[in-house]
Image (cartoon, rainbow, N blue to C red; front, side, top):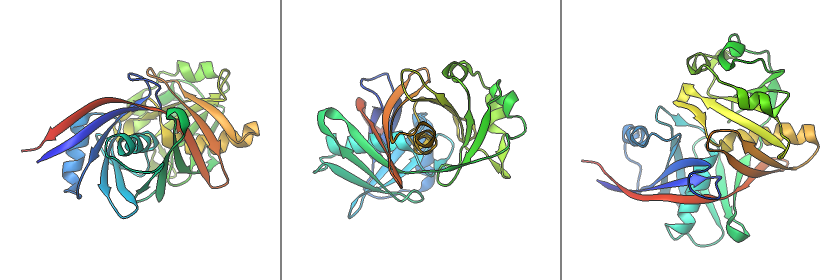
Length: 271
């Protein structure tokens, strides 16, 4: 079996920035175990798999350890591949997902791509036991996102506090909220040169720190739009690679505007 593979840096103006994702186009779905082995072999935060359907593509995402319900950066990368490598016509590509509904990636002038995600609300919760020890700092507020982004949000006072975090990944992976293991922890604060800064830690699903997390901004867009009183926000993720997006917050959807850079075209050989 031979499969095409593309590696794309998403939410990046050039290669070596943003969040790298693997995109693997398929003709039909193989066994899930093979999808998981490919994602583990790629060893990126997410590998996206595409199968054509009547409206565009069916889309699934796998970390090296598990399938996930929603991934923003690998969806943007999948749209980039559909437009630029698979010959998709028009300015919109539609993705059917198992748990996040239909996702749409569009082309906007001068190389920008748009990604529509569900707007995700969050609820104030008590900090889970061990959160301060796991993060190495105490947030002034904790919140829990609703489906499909049920991540814990740790809100800090300043960008400097978020940047300085040096979490204990073993402890983060063991955190629970509402009786469930926490998929990820989003540390966030109001920015200075941008409106919102964040970091995303997901050791429970095999991603210690994600360079740029599109799905987190469907939740952060809702949170910070309410607090800052604006529907258009600039966002930066403070990972080592960094990543930026404009976040446009609507009534039911959040649109991320960013760019992608192709790093690699390759072939997977499965014997």
